[in-house]
Picture 1 (cartoon, rainbow, N blue to C red):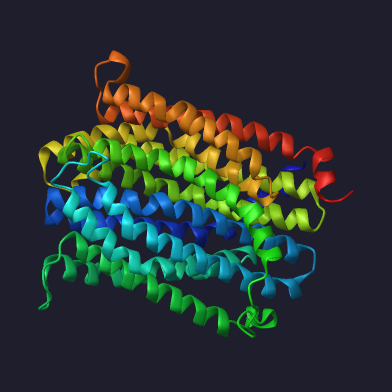
Picture 2: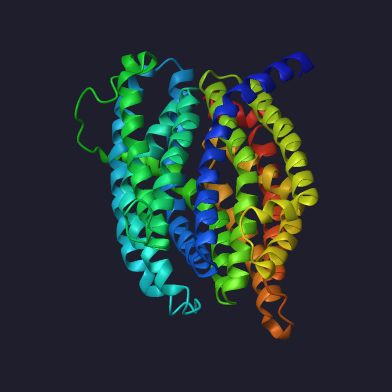
Length: 456
């Protein structure tokens, strides 16, 4: 593989990824806004939003991941010159998004009933319940948004993701503050206010995205909303066959973090609030490799669609090169600026000290986290999703969670290390996932295996 061609692929991947990264950072900043507003309102509100956010994202991993079947499907059709099939596929994906959104709404309606049996500290339960009951109204909009976003990204159009992420911030900051603190004559709603503000933001993003897709000249030939198609099980089943393993894989990783948050919630308000700050910062860092991984999915899928095996391998290598650089920068920032970053969230000395120490653990998993998400993204481009699902389940739940729970909660007769022990489990799970998924990608991208996928 020539260096100039690899360098050109790095430039193309970076150009495709940059708006995705910006959009993901905007999404991460939305969580930052939630936590910053909640933290200013009080430690109890921050802890409630921490637990509520965990229970919101836990089930959302499945529909979000399932709809990730759209980018590789669309990019392969586009690469093969079959654009006429994209519109019908998109309309079936909308039916799938609607069903997933309804299931999510029902889950969030019932989920607060499980807070007390899970052992969440009693002072956290009311606020977390209010937050979930507020944000559930925005879930159908979010699943439709994912569907439209993944369509655009599969066609190498990533600018809307960036712009609509910024729109979300513009809406959430004033509306979230007003509903939380009771500004401009509104009642003070605390955690519930952040939930309702998030729902308002999600609906505005979804409606705006639909308008953009309808009016964009580059999408006109697809006639995305040009006709009504009833649901067709064959097409939906195809999307589920590719997407559901992706959803379960993302759930395996995401639930490792989320269940960690819920277990730390058993330890009280200070550990829960400190963990929420640290994990929010780590999540912001993760938005960069996640955007690069999504760009790599599209580049790999497009190369596979045009039967270019060498292009598949170049796209994967370009993704790795970019991610290694971004993760080095993230690790340096977390190591050198942990106390400064934490000071943006809270003035509580006990919360700040614990959160700053947890960011040092976050620095330790920057490289394995970047490698595993990039490997998973490249495998999605190949529609290789079932085996990675099993590998992720083993890494996160066979290694990461048992180790974290043992160290953090003092199981098996050990002294409890608290949040720090749970974070050691995160590091272990991500490291094992990076090794296993990286090895799987190396095997799946061998010339003989690519030839089979390309029908040669």
